[in-house]
Every structure is written in C-alpha cells, then in structure tokens.
Amino acid sequence: RPDLSPLEKDFTILSAGHNSTFVFGTGGSGGKIKWEVVLEPKKTGTFLIPSLKIGNEQTNPLTIVVSNASLAGKSAKGDIFIEVEIDDSDAYVQQQLQYTMRIITSQDFRYKTFSHIGSADYKDDRITVLKVDDENRYRAKIDNKNYFVIEYKFLLFPQQAGKIILPAPQMDAIVNNRNGYSRDPYSTRRQRQISIKGEDIVLNVQPIPQAY
Image (cartoon, rainbow, N blue to C red; front, side, top):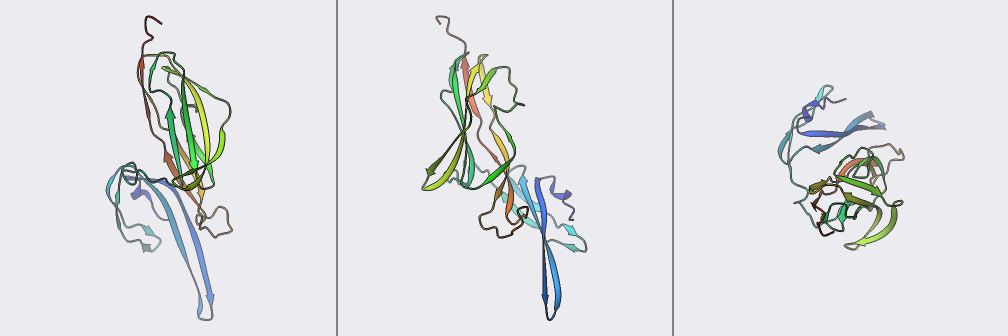
C-alpha cells in the first residue's frame, strides 16, 4: 500500500483502493496493480502532489490547480447536487417559515453521511425545526436533462431576533459510474465516493412588532 500521508496536508483522502490485472500468453505471464485514490482539496490554489513510493516504485509528481466550485461553471448542473430554499428570509420571531431541501440526481447513489438542519445532531436554541411528513420523490427535467428528486420540507420557528445562519446540508455518498464494467459491486471501477454541499441560508429575524 502506498504511503499517502504526504497528501494529508492539502487534501482529505476520501477513498483508496486498487485493481489487479493479470495477463497470460505464450511469451509468459505478467500483471500490474493500479491504485485509485479519491482526494478532496481542503482549499483552492495550486498544489503539488508529491512523488509517492509504492514498494520499489515511485509515482511522478503532479501539479494541479483547484478552483472554487461556485465560480467554475456555476450554471452547469452536475450528476448530483443539493438545492435549498426558504419562503421568507426576512422574518419575525415565532413566524412560521418553510425550508425546502432537495437532493437532485441523475445517478444511483447510497448515503454514507448526510447532515442538515433536520439531523439529530443539529442544535441551535435560536430556532425550532420541525420535519413536515415524509420525503417526497419525483422526476424532473432540468436544462433538458432528466433527474430524480428527493425533497424534504421543514417548518422553522425563530425564537430570537438577529441573524441566524442555516448551515448548508452536506452529504457523502457512493455513486455508480455509468461506464463501470466490473461485475464486482465493490470495485472502484464501478463506484466512487463523492462529497457534495448545498448553500447556507441567512435569516434576518426581527422582534415581534409591539402592535402584534
């Protein structure tokens, strides 16, 4: 196994796996092992992926440029993304608000982790969060592309005046590659791990009017 510790300064290592290939012929036999490492940059900028040692071999160093995803092709929709919205970002204390969160995907996936304002570990005494019924599933066409939508709705009740930031939902998931050909369902050729994030929503909460 390669030593990946030099990568940990600038990247989060999401997964690492390998595929083995063996060739048999009249001239003899041979084989190779291909390592596949999925990285998530910790920040934007230019980074050097150093030479990594694998047994008696070494990889070549590689320079990459990491751009801000919100600036690189913002109008283009990917295969899977998260969308959030609220019906009123300027509200009063104890006013009912509806928060909608959608996972929009064109690929099969399964959750690894999914954190959002409805998660059990979300705590903010300044706002009460109530889930509305079960998730709603339907199909939609966006930019002439077919998607499957998983929609969640929550009722929010601000308890305190001021600015409240609703943190962006974030999901780690395993998706199936469309061009995968391995019959092994756990093969890295067929599956990959992704991390996607929605957007924060800022609430500007005013005190209850005295005439109320």
